[in-house]
Length: 128
Image 1 (cartoon, rainbow, N blue to C red):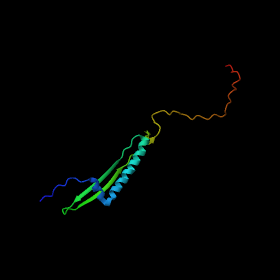
Image 2: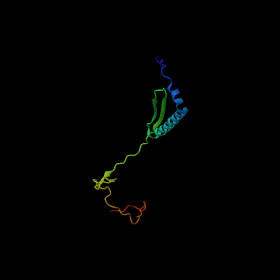
Image 3: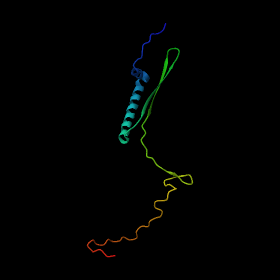
């Protein structure tokens, strides 16, 4: 004799039964933490992405028992980092200046030895 099909039950009720309700509490806490981080990062960068993953592993035995193992995973948003452009030197190291380009300031400019005074503005200009 076959068993009658009951149809699907409420999945939230199933989650409440797992780990005596602890799984649902942990899932809610992870969801809240992820939302807080998304909100904070979206305000500074304009957009933020994250993921909340619930893994439920079911193993049924022939005597009618089902072992249920659950795992809650989050993928938190990544904050944007700055980008740096570097060049390879002839020796194979990374340097900040392009070795194929002439330096902008090829020599050291010595400091001024003495400060000159500006002539008084009321004096007539000197002829050249």
